[in-house]
Image 1 (cartoon, rainbow, N blue to C red):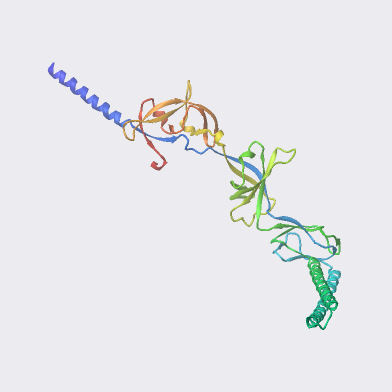
Image 2: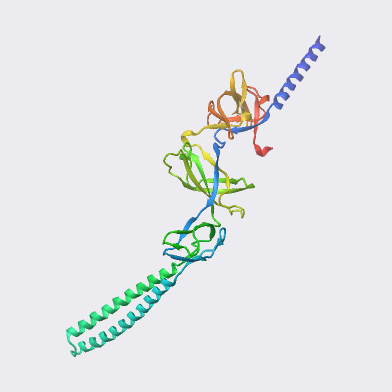
Length: 363
């Protein structure tokens, strides 16, 4: 009986040691997510079309007969290069007349100046009357005014002559020719449509439900169907205040990176805008892998700190979840900021189990 007692006692001690070892081995490593650390950015995509950043219908500032149109549709013209000319014969005659008038006015001014200086010296020596002095002074001032007027008329005539040549205001491409040679045109009547060659922007439209969440300066991504392997970075530069009778708002995006040579105006594409919720609309999102389901509903496992360093204890928490989005499940209630939600290995968990936490750096 004594031998049997010692055998049973030894078996019990071995069982206790085995249970202790088993308990130590049960501290399971798990991955986790701290509530409030996950992004709640919502990505929204909208159809878009590329367009030149600068586009204008160029016209002469003076009227006349179009003598020459030096460009063709699709030509790229550098800034300052000529696009078309008017018959400038009449404007050149007016310029020459103004130049002759200025020359005559300057001669008269010089003559009047000499006469005034002579009379002024005589008047100072009491050898000329006050009337003679004032008359010479008035004639000199009149000649000065006439010369200045002639100078301004010459400047205006030169401008008119220069305006007979239509030049590119910036480097761009001729997108349409709206007039013909030997055709009469008036000041301000479009001759060509001209678009910037190197600066392309993108226009899209967004619904009124999210326009309040879009602001100038937001960074976006732009992709084009004709360039499937290429994406462009962009920044919102303009946001429309709305158009009467329309529920869509125009948004202009400027491409911030170096544009591809194949990128031209008129290409269709997609603008992807990261929309962050307003602080009053903030929600909690958790990984879909963290959510479990049973007959009582949806729940998650939380890791709660213990007195033992690096060891946490598992507890179950019922939650109410919303729709699944790219950010994960939206948690309507059940979780608080800084709760530690276990996201992997949950099928081995139960209430009260000991775990240690891993992050992605431990992979």
